[in-house]
Image (cartoon, rainbow, N blue to C red; front, side, top):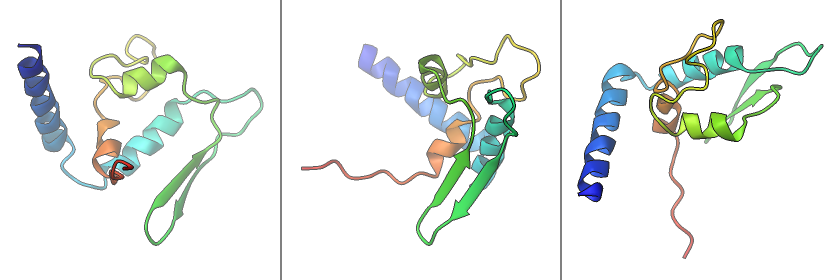
Length: 110
C-alpha cells in the first residue's frame, strides 16, 4: 500500500509541476528568485552569474549556502523553509522543482 501511495504522489507532483511550469525556461526564473531569497554574509553584495557552456549551464551565487533543512525542503512539497517568513518571494515549495526538470540524469555507475 505504501508503494502504491508513493507512486501516486510521485505522479501527482510530476503532473502538477508540468502544468504549473510547462515552459522549460521557467527554471531560470526560479534560480533568480532563489538567489533573491538567499542569505548572504554581512557586507557582501549579492551576485548571481549564469555561465553558458556548450553542454551545460553553471550557476554561481555567493550566498551563505543551503542548510540541511533547505535541502530537505527543496526535495519535498509544501515544506518550504520560507513559508512562515515575510520578505521572501518563494514559499509554496514547488517552484524549484522546475530546476530538477531540466537536469540530465547521469547513468548509474556499474
